[in-house]
Length: 210
Image (cartoon, rainbow, N blue to C red; front, side, top):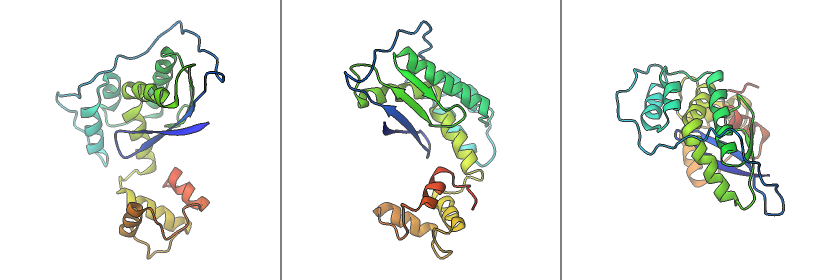
């Protein structure tokens, strides 16, 4: 199974697991009886915005304004994405993928955790395009905000969030600063072991405790 990345509209990168199959490796997906494939919009919202509040007010406003999906705007309008709304978005994504002839499953309630079995004749790139097209109308902003609010409830800047976690788990000392993390991120050369399992824990959930 190959991991590909679908870049979410906000800071979050939502990982998509794509099982890319060759012509000999996959069975043709059956034609679904129920097609819930959304009609993709192309124009961002230009009307009045809801009055958002809280640490993520700007992010919700940005997502609401930039989304081309009526469904996503309806979910975002109250400034909260709950688990039921996330699950409904993911259900719609699966239905969209099924409508395009793919076999897709999702770990419901877990943003960004998918398994997609490609149709005969589809390359990884072309299947990834369909994954993204279905996400535009169903999950993109919803998943991004759901995960980010949980992982970063006070909306700290990314470097501070990660360094706080690294310090808490003992990956770096208290003298390691967010500014240094930013600099090392730009060069890709880090002064700590990026293969440390504690780094993985922080990357998966920056709020993790010892």
